[in-house]
Image (spheres, one colour):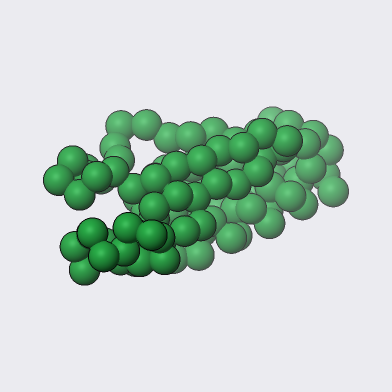
Length: 107
């Protein structure tokens, strides 16, 4: 992650944006997911959707869930269901809702 305050544009953004994200990326199952906070005057809190991430290994699903839940809100605790050894729902610290699901075996 790179905050606006750490970026070359730090002098050009309002002070309240210095801790916000200029660029962030994460690798999920060999794919990269990247994002950025919206420009200052256009920002609206996300709503009306959730992102679903499928994992092959239950241990990895639990690890990612725990990391993303830090500073956020757990909606459905990571648990075994009839379709998954590890399933949970959270809202991360940025207000994005995530559904984590393991389609593989318990690990």
